Length: 302
Image (cartoon, rainbow, N blue to C red; front, side, top):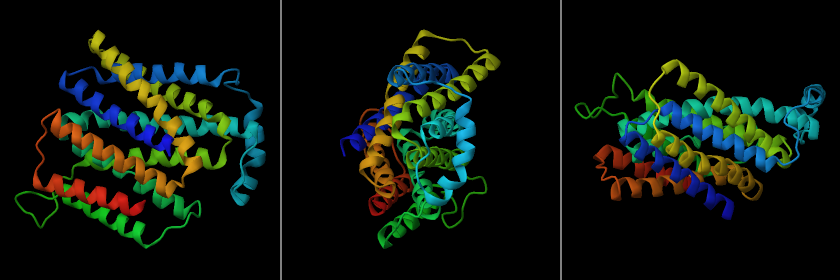
């Protein structure tokens, strides 16, 4: 359980640092570049003597794929190496997109609502774990899923026409929900089919992919880089590299349908508290209603 609590703390710290950085109009791509570079370096250190790449991994992966898919067993060491690369690249793309969107949303919608919707993405790994991985789900989690959907609708209600949904939805929040949840589910797939000793290889390719995309965008945008941007990148990078590591360890102790909701609920509570107390955020009635519904939903799903 300690790993789940540490994952909650790291997740909350990321949102808080983003709030500080957006308030100072930081260079988003420099922040994400340094963040992912920090993650890469930490992953390399934690990998120790483990190989980063071997061409034979992919041939073994292809040989084992059908058997693993049918039986649900783990890939071998070689197969897990290829799995770590493939899923790491996918996760890196999803996390990069969600991080950029998260930064923008924190500045636009506030840390409270942004963190709530990012962690509402728990719906995706929870539902897909049931549908694709055969995990069981009871009545209360189903009620939680329904409440989560209601929360999404509430946050998008037009203040002038309370019974109608806005013609222009808060697309950034919806995309944040989808991308964050998708990244969490890919992490679940690695935990479910890969050998845990390769988790740092998986994280390395996640951060390598994110760093590559961030660096390309940084060059294309050609914005001025400040020292404070690099500092924010490191401040995000440290909890960001620790969070998935703690989560993967936590998934060995707690089922996904319980672990993901716990992390989400804890993060929402901490970030909302910090948003109101430290950043003086003022939430409207619909934002408060959506946050309360989300917390209740996540508790039910756990």
